Image 1 (cartoon, rainbow, N blue to C red):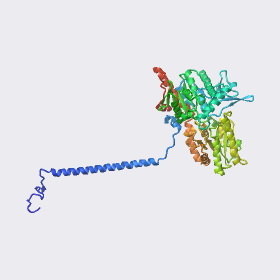
Image 2 (cartoon, rainbow, N blue to C red; image 1 turned 180 degrees about the vertical axis):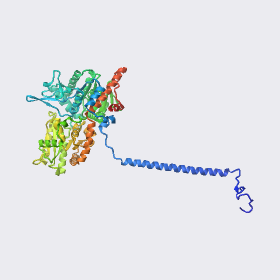
Image 3 (tube, helix red, strand yellow; image 1 turned 90 degrees about the vertical axis):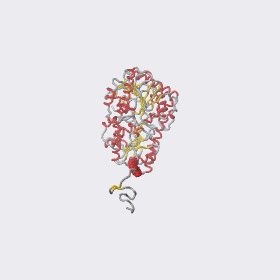
Image 4 (tube, rainbow, N blue to C red; image 1 turned 45 degrees about the vertical axis):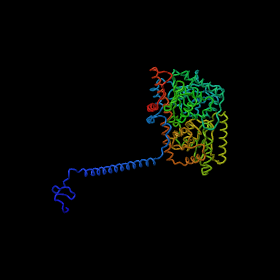
Length: 611
């Protein structure tokens, strides 16, 4: 205390009460600064908490981004997984029994009629005898088990030399001979009709138009007239074979683009499913065809138009959008034209599983021995095979170029690898096919002269037809199967090779331009136009370990097994069943016929596929 300060007062002038400070009544000048200080402290703490939380969130986000950055790139989605099918659909064991169940429950009393140019069984004269031939055809391989399962009727051109001798008075014959399961109804064509409709418009016009193989399409007015006339003749046959007004008609391929509309005009309640087995070009290429509008109008007589891949579906829809006045629902892949709605869906075609041919063949070792003895191949030679019709879209010459690259850059393989090409004669009267045959023989001879030696022929080319059993024996004997299509809708050779290899060995070399490459992702995918790249990949195939072969083949066999031909047909029949039910509902409630509600939404397709 300072001198002069009264006892009981602090030096600051505040009175003391006892030994304690006595606060005067007017203390607001001390309280206000204290409250402000605490407020500042709380704000600072809050800012600190927010900053800390922000840093934590940023750190977590950084770890997530880093995880995304190191995540391996996912492979392309298989084609069968792109088409509105649910995951549950893959769990169904698709078989003939599955198809029969669908017909019994979803399409009771439905008659199934298949229409194609090629017949599943051909009767030819051989001396005094009649020989039965099963043509080597992907279409036949796919559809024959379906027609058997459905006990249907197959309408086709009867081109065998003895076909007329085995049919009844209605031009029908029950097939297969050893176990009749369905009716084959043959249609007869004159030489002039066959020349104009099949060799002319279909194969000199539409075939090169739809394939990117750089062969110019040829369109003649006389061929178009024959095409129209033959389509009309097949329409008459379908109507004659239909037991009621509501059959399910499966129209096959580019030979019958006008047929759906012709059938629709006479059987308006029929379910018509048209499947286009070859690629569909983009709208610019399609514009080349002088009768493009009529072809589109004919196909839009179908309830459903099917293609192998979504890409070809999109090309078709774009063509309709460009050349016809129509309404397109792209979300549902539906086209409204002329008072009718047509669906456009992708149905990747496949083969029978398991193939019946496997039960008739010995084990792989015996198949290898038999094939090598038949073609004079040494035991130590690695065997590459190619099997198809002799066609400029199949890339046969490009395989020869790949073999040339391999032997040129890796001469140590001379004498250790051979290529066996099975090329069934096809359309031999057309100049483009005659030229291809000559080029194949010339190039094979050139390779044999340059790399061959005594006891070793690097290229063996066989231009003759083989039975399915013989083809499967070749698959089982091969070390490598080469499918090098320049452009293909699907190509079932690839799937047949996979199905034949129950030993889980062998390597599939597959063109990126074949539809099968969208499903068989474990194959070695190649660009057939790149000979150097093909040579490198062929070397990879020849030196691949057995374990890698096994891993790749196991996965491909799972794909072919789960997505077999019964699933292909079953998906179309289930869509047909949904269409029929919608039409029946419309009829029951008196809906206007000009606007049928037969659009199947994507959600509906997923539900149906899971049945």
